[in-house]
Length: 398
Image (cartoon, rainbow, N blue to C red; front, top):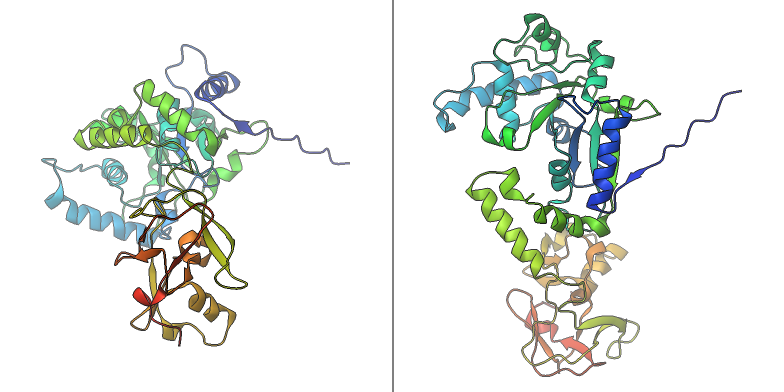
């Protein structure tokens, strides 16, 4: 009789303190000694469900031929654009430089610093979804892949030729017919840019299996583990990291990093709650039978922008592309702006906000300007339905 699989206990950090305890435990559980120079590697990702995939996979170019074309084009065009006096002559250093500047590669960025990885996980998350920090035992990964519990810097001056030969298959010469190994490998980069040093960067390089890391994430002997950062604690963790001096200036040590750090700090200081600037809610309409209407939940002063902070994206699609006499067509007719043979609608009808439910009236209490923002044209009392004259900004349904 087959034994039941051991249940996996998810790792969840609801505070900076929780996360530091988990990352510290990983060092112990993976048998790193306190005096070891190396330790676990960490990778922060904005969304929990994202897999460990390099950008060349994410853009759909994960084949040798396309990768070689990208490498060649970068090598040909980079000299005229580079701030460096001379670009790297070594294939590995050129590959690291490609990754550093956002070109598609099979490299995945990791860091030896758990707090830097945590910052990347929460940095651009507004708190709408869970983030994640992945933890990796790179020595165990390499032991299983190349039978050597060691991390090699393939382009470092004075590197052991036998070691560099061992990792060479992961980056064949362009246009060679040599097969790339199947599984990912941990490697150290040469610090060709200041950002690599400041972020304590290290890399894994994917093999031919785009889901290669999935083999190392299950079971008690997993050498890759995920820590979930719930969306409701993202902002508080980001604030705690800023108090410790971890912000964009730390991660990106240049003037651009300083500018982003200041923008983030002052923006979050002026953010309070989801009901800020909210004046309305949806209820059954009084002016259009069987329809939904928009009602004031508090007094709205004259000349007030009614839907502050709303997503204001409008997508224009030709009327001719929408099938006639169908439930789909009625969605457009009921909600969209009609102008010059086009429908202006949300980027998805699943994103309808209260503004799209405004009903028509020839005695309106709001007006719609040329940017499709609604303003009160008089004081509107709490409980009053908001209306607008459709003819002032939309053509009639035909």
